[in-house]
Length: 144
Image (cartoon, rainbow, N blue to C red):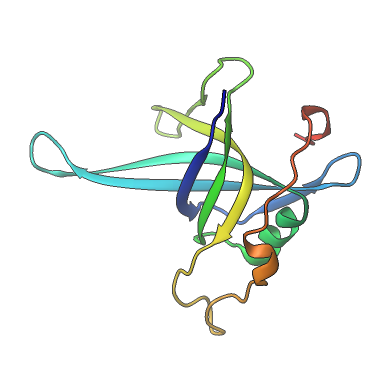
């Protein structure tokens, strides 16, 4: 069996990089994907889906260095179900409603152009690592 997912979205916060006990870098990203459509009543509906993304190896270091809140990225990888529910992680929002987030282990991260960034223009990302596949690691090495 095979599972592959491709997402394009914006980061909801700055990347957070950590290291496994063996010293391998892991960067956590929060990715929001948006979809807009017309509802049955003809009004426009905006739907946002959140993903928790784990990036490993050299790509984790590059992502932590060059990405920031709001960055547009394309991420390829596979979904990982919540250990307790077998599905997405369910949580309570501040307004009391339920929400869900999905965990994705990234195998590829591509930085997308998103217009001007600060006064210096778009971020310069080394092409040799911007889309480089990431290494994967076992559950025992993930620091969270």
